[in-house]
Image (tube, rainbow, N blue to C red; front, top):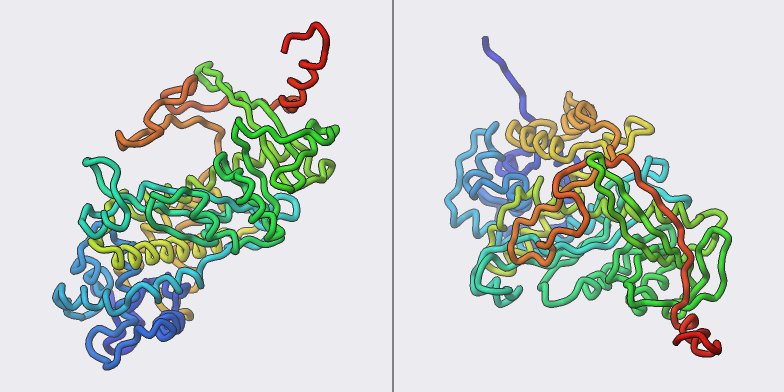
Length: 459
């Protein structure tokens, strides 16, 4: 039996420059535009144009386990194109540089879903979140250590990555990265400019610094942040839902105190106390209980890093041995991640009422890899109008999310989270009940002052 297949690619020496079906999200015109803006277009048209180099750098993130020749073989598996030598591919990367890849990510970055998509909005606000990641490892070379530093003699240097993501789809709105010597808040300040009045920002402890909250508030965005235990804002007024009116850094906020208790299938029970501050002052439209339940959406950001670090990058150390190469590689990885998120979200929105949580990022990555190797669906208008990635994702939707507790796995002995949380089960367990109790918030400073003024009352 003879099977004949027609492949439609760019003409001439531009043929290897594609990303399979993802080329429809990163089209040739966009690739040419970012290259021209950065001044990275080749001066003379030879066997390796700059556009081919841009797609080659993106493909390196899609095939992290392959070397240069292996990545080139994936791009040209369906084409009759010879592989250039390694020096030519290295020179191609240098010619492309960092600026076009960063510009490409900035074009792709942003919210990916329509407001009516399930799980994207809380009332009239789009929920977004800040979070950092220090698990992306780089080669241990003198130039990388000079840029990033290194803690201890063992292990690899790591990059501090800070992103702002849309929690409903886990799409990236912005990203910055660099040395871990600077704290997460310092990196997050560089992304505050991306917020607007349509957003509600979910933040963990450590992001409650007054100056940072003032910067977030200045963008007209609302925030919901967990407070450190040492922060005790004053009580100005009590609301019927159990929250109180207070002030932090000159910003009026509602403070909500609650105790969350989790009971697992094996009988284990544990919990914690949460104190949240929010600039949403309307307790009738946004009661304390609803905000407490919303706060766990911040953990969707952790799944963003799971998909980026383990599903897409496959837990591997980056390739580049110098800072310029690392910057190019990371911006390419982020752009590729975002292109896949756009493809997934577009597919999910084709079925109204489907939550993006049910989409499998792993299926999307595997399908994108297969399509690149086969050089299919590169141009719009091909016979496969539905899209291979979208069909594969919709055919493999996860079931409704099950409440469960997953045991923490520590892969690095240098991790500050290597100690197991007290009371939490050491194996994955199904959650049988989860209770939330709004508790009364007390201003301890005023309580101590009243006690000191009351005769016979111990200080």
